[in-house]
Length: 431
Ligand code: GDP
Image (cartoon, rainbow, N blue to C red; front, side, top):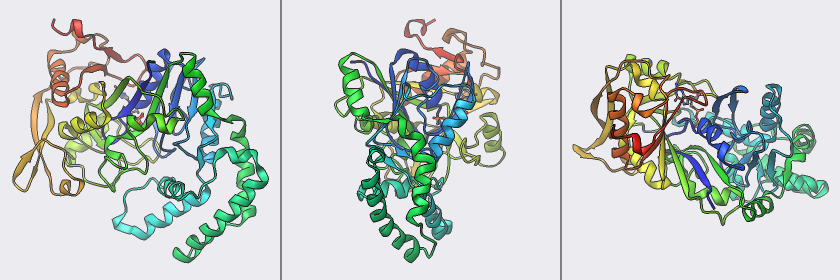
């Protein structure tokens, strides 16, 4: 069975959404398997420009079934608002092309509130949460204190379950944070306003996927964020609260038996990072501002300026390894076209020693980057569609990255539009 996972190799915002939008042409089903609406994918195609947060990026392709798996943080309120927005832009979303797992847990209003209260309490020690409730949500899920989407089909039992959880939750909101708790009436109203809207889309997606696999359907797993934000393998605690790994895709999707034979790791031609935490290759001052502007590096969800730096081969090679990427899509190469010379971070210096191995998170606090430079190409490459038409310096850069991260680069993107893509054909490499 030829399933594929599209995952982020770095801190996220690498351009996974545009890769999924492009490649869904070859797949029948797209599944989001982790994370919530806390990040944003920007997709530009023949239907327009879209900012997706929780909807799978296969939603624009006719005939493709999109699934929100059991591993996602299902925020009914924001999902419904996002659906309304995308539908208003002329995209059909029906229970035929969007299915929500009955085993996905609901992100409740108190998750967002607690996220905000905790960030406030932390003050300057904050982790840089997007305040979408993701960390409180996953903590509750692992404490078995969430409501599953399928409970909406059992209203009486769900109400009792909600009452029980709310009693506990209010203890924390009121006694730990001194804030105002919720009444069951407020929560039931919220459920009426938003959960009822998404109810028609909820079904046993695990059963659907098992059946689809039997029929030979091809599945694409879509990740949110990147390796360095993975809860277990990322720069903890500056991670997200879920697993962004391809290895988690089957479990978070509802098809734990699946084995994707293709893992496309998306790598940006330079580095960006939103929020707090060690970012060894970070650039500052005018140099950073110029790159940020060239790459329009401002968060899709928050508008926050992203921290920027050169491509980090230490972090990227690690990301490729932990994702077990079988190939890499290198995005935003066009953004580097203004540079006379292209910086690359090739090692970390820690306590006077240089290493090219990805260190323990705390050791990264004291690391400084080792920077080398490649020749720039100084011309517009956004119209290039064939590998052999790229300037030799641009090809040299791609080949250098490929060698450094130890994985073939099969796609190179040179613009945000669906067709701004160079399909790298190995046979044409040696011209
Ligand atoms: P995702 O969360 O990984 O899907 O990435 P984002 O959507 O947050 O960030 C990628 C941004 O870069 C989006 O605004 C895309 O439209 C844009 N983008 C993607 N690929 C390219 C490219 O090759 N060149 C340029 N200039 N922009 C790109």
